[in-house]
Length: 326
Image 1: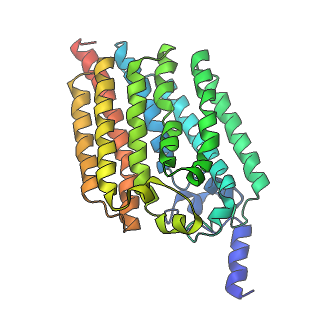
Image 2 (image 1 turned 180 degrees about the vertical axis):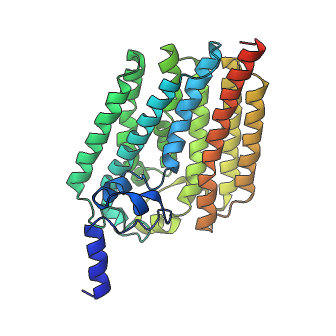
Image 3 (image 1 turned 90 degrees about the vertical axis):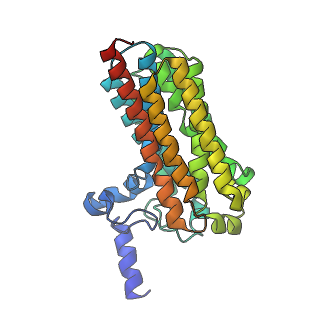
């Protein structure tokens, strides 16, 4: 072994070696205690974008339900519970996905430095970590009503099968969308104890949104996926990706508008959705599927989509209450 190789191995054993596809200078690499770093990386705490994308549909749904019953703002306690739940369950899902994909990840330069293929975390320890995070998620879940608890537990089947879909179908992003946006149903259920057409339409629109942005993300891996025999919508759409992503985004916007209409939102929300439409149009019109950095920037820009929809809903509740429209 060379001196450099020995140094790298020592760094990994101490949890110091960063993951190749994580943002440079992230807080995990800079500030987290060395023994914690492999597990924080396994949970993608060094890349918070996924937590935001999981959380925002939950917050949208909570706030949409509050609009429907005329409350002036979403319950902060409920928003906090969903934030903690999204954080730990996103971590559990990523760790489980890495466990399932560990042999594939070891064969790709971008993912070979992840905690399991690099030897920072054993597969058995990764599974134990998944169980631990899932238990924390369950402790959060039991604060909600029984209907929401049962609804949350029912999502586990989608979470369990998702990592295998890229081996079976060119549309794994559909399963990801179905699993990743379950919070769009749960937020409404947590507030109202049941479901209605408004959260169902919100959920359907969010699934289309996820198919769109994850197709953009998947274009970073098309060459590796072809080499490994894995499938994705990026490979299916190829050079037609801008058209397909644009179509999914338009469908998402229309379904979100319909959900808002059924829940009783007002002009503020629809104006917010219009602004989101402009941001999505920028994503599609400037997308370069051959440029990984370009794809990653547009994927990450969807955090702004989530924030804009949430702020539009919050503004709707406050202004409608103040104006006596609720």
